[in-house]
Image (tube, rainbow, N blue to C red; front, side, top):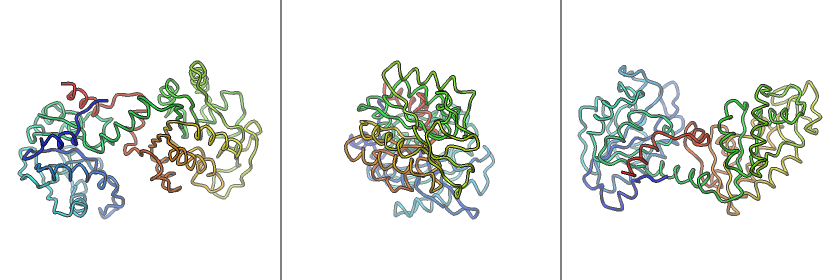
Length: 400
């Protein structure tokens, strides 16, 4: 995927004295009093802003926050807490501008934050009229918000059509590079791990990956449905029996191209879904009618680790078992450590999705994964093989 980048424009000296409009993802969680409880996204937005400021640009930054009603600004929709935290990280005041569509005053070497962009009428519907107004505010548009790349909105898509120059910021550019490396031209074998409660929510991803990967590892309720497809009884485990035919098609697709979908040989089961439930390890075909599968067993874990150790590229989305409960976390834990180990030995690994990030944090391996995606929905849609509108428009602009 070829797009123009902010870094390349800076290197060419094209930012000096220019008005730069940066669409960041500053949608961070807040408590009831409006205090920011986790600022990863704000910190991730800083490099693009600093890059533009150091290059002598007049910088405008905007983002959405929460789910405001268009045209109806409320105090809880304000980016005021974001402006304060951003100022602390940048080491300079970051003024917050309201009613900014009619014009913004900002000098080269200065930065302002433009109030919640989703309050503007036409933002979510990608209004051309709104997009043209925003494009008129700047000389260069920068999209640095991968988390919203799957949405065609005025600040993520429309403005990129009408701005004089449109490019990707360092965060978005890094996502494009990592995803392209993982699925565009991967080092083989390509191993994908897709886990979760339901096949139905990941069916498009599974079908797309089955066409691309060498090994497809499934976990959680998804694996249970595949076990059903192989004629194995799974007791009262979470599964979707109506999707057994789809699972059989995925297995056949992989087999036709020489790929494999290794299923658990042994599992850890319990009669109740709770942290202190009594755990029992058994063969995958020996689950009692009143038991549910909550993790893979030690033999399956060793097999999974072997597959990961041989991988050239690893795409990871989802924990293998109920890793929140100590008795059912070994599969996910050992898998996470194996991915970290394979990465240290030269494999390229990319991970994304909320539960995946929680597992990475729990096992303290963030610095041992090649790339951790910042966008949940965008990451999943990329795995589905979908075109991400915000990236697509930048590709079109780069192509002239």
